[in-house]
Image (cartoon, rainbow, N blue to C red; front, side, top):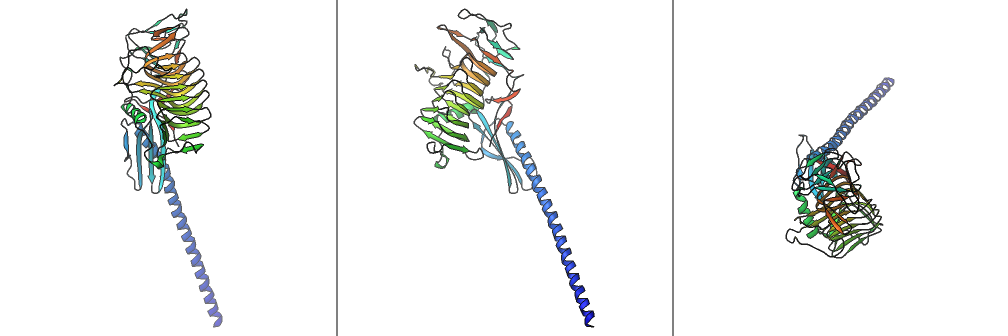
Length: 427
């Protein structure tokens, strides 16, 4: 009898053990299935976050109004998933910001965007209608789509040199208009704000240029800046990101400075010979860029003069009211001279010296002296040539404008109601 009891007790223990093992196995399988489903849903949500961010960028590329608020846009009806977008001005370009969220996971995407330029279809040259023909002299070359005044183009003669090309324009000639294509209306407003009002809004948004040799601010954070009434000298520093640096007098950039993606604001901006960087320089009096510099895409030099209330701005100082780009320098981006009142004078407002090159875009609603090469697009009111003590209006002497040594599609300064493109993804 005792033996039978022991057998029954052992059998019961074995049965309980089997039941526990089965319960643990089933629990493990249920937990595995739940975890797999959860991870699959999270992975799917992360992929959808990225796709939604791309959708948000596409949405902003179609917007023509800057909105200071962050907008929530409704593309999909899905629980626990949202997308917010923000479009702001960033110098003469725009800054797109999107953030998509699924439960606790977020994905942020930022980019610089500008007007879409197609090298095969966009104007290689747009010369404003001023009732004066374009005159080409020496080894001047113009290739691409040329929009010219009614009088067209003709060969000329300067200092014993005639025109040596086999064609006046190597491309299509179309008629221009009495005004240059309009810039986005936000650009003028933001340039006035930068030059007259901008300062970092709070102490936490300031950066100390004197104590930091390396400063980086992500474009996912708030914009930070530095401001001084006195001259600012940038040297032996590495500064990059979502940063604005402003002086009320002068910013001088030494070749030992490494600047990337930021905006510089001052009446006068001087860039030393041999400087390498990627930034926007916005000035109101003059910009001088020394020899053998390289400004990488999408850089910008912008000289803005709000002269509608004082149209007779004249300075006796050399290079004032002027952008000067010296020999051997390469700029990949946009160079702009913008004035609110166009003056019928002979003052040279932008100079591209011999063996200097702009790969991108020139916009000048004044007089542009072209001695080097522009690969991309030129929009200008007039050309000017200062030779042998004389001023030749609407003449190009040994200058080149062509549309071959650039990408087929690239971005530039934002025009009114023009299609846009991504210029650079940010960090």
